Length: 300
Ligand code: OGA
Ligand code: MN
Image (cartoon, rainbow, N blue to C red):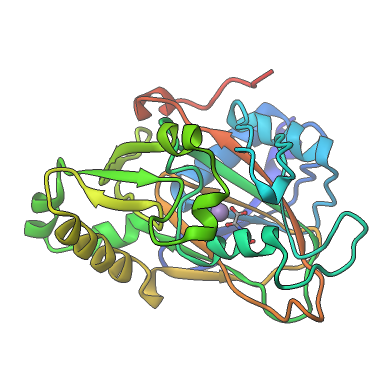
């Protein structure tokens, strides 16, 4: 066992977050000591990159469960209203052909090109997402990540104090996007309008971060305009180049991100020429955050 653990190696990929881990095959059951190393690195680096992990959906789900129980996706056009544990990020139809740019699921996925944290519109937001590169374009289509932790740390102390204790309304739909708004039922829109603190704390290491993104629309107790203005300003601050890592996909990459403290967005590519298909599993969070101070039990 310790033999396995010693082959794991962690290399930082960016000055303020992101590490690549090598020396482990995640497609087969992972020893608890090795998962402890991965869990600790996840809490420290926020984004983990693994290369050469040829997952199928079953092995991806099995590995993801080390982090806890998985979310089931919300029903919408992009999953043919048949959601499961796997969200497919693709510009292909079921036969593998390029979808026309006017296809509703492609239009829905354009939302991913805005900075966001997965499931921030759920009452208990996601802990982690695991994205596996199945088919990747030769150019473009990077996923970009921003560290809400590094951004928070860089704020002046008086700004940190001013932001402490504020709560933010997150919604599944953007109010000004009509196509997007039609994709969800009234029941979903109601259930998926929630409030989260603007500043979150990692229970393992006490590090604080900004918790924002495209689903964050208003600040409780402020006018819509004032809240929006502050959220936009913080998003701009958080997504400055010094806090951003851009991941160029290779086939069989697995990238894991901490949704509690990072934002991410898809970048575009030539969708009329190239194929892209990434499969995501999403690990449910827990409320309150303090429940995640220890490594999770294996979920069933
Ligand atoms: C996601 C996501 C971005 C991408 O899977 O949650 O936002 O680059 N993906 O596909
Ligand atoms: Mn996402």
